[in-house]
Amino acid sequence: MPRLLILLLPVFGLAFAVPWFFTGDSGVRFLGLPSWVVYALSAAALYALLVAVLIGCCWNVSAGTEEDNE
Image (cartoon, rainbow, N blue to C red; front, side, top):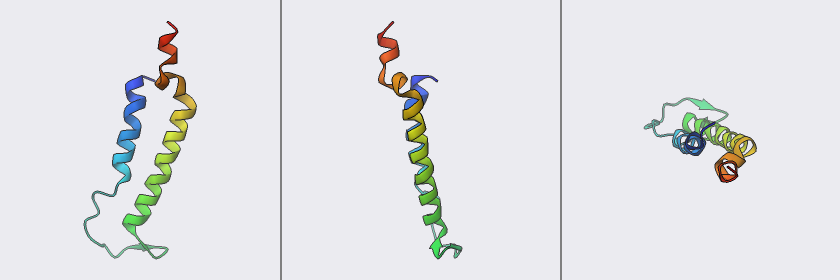
């Protein structure tokens, strides 16, 4: 996986985790919470999972250790 993609995935994930497009209360509730809260909590959990996977799989690539050994 290219280093640029590894560095940009968390930035895009964080941008999608913010509920930008919820402008008003739609009246839809899930467990008593507005839909934007459910979206934000779900997106935050997925973002944390994405970052954990990227750290676990690509730590050497993002740290630059593979290119320094060449």
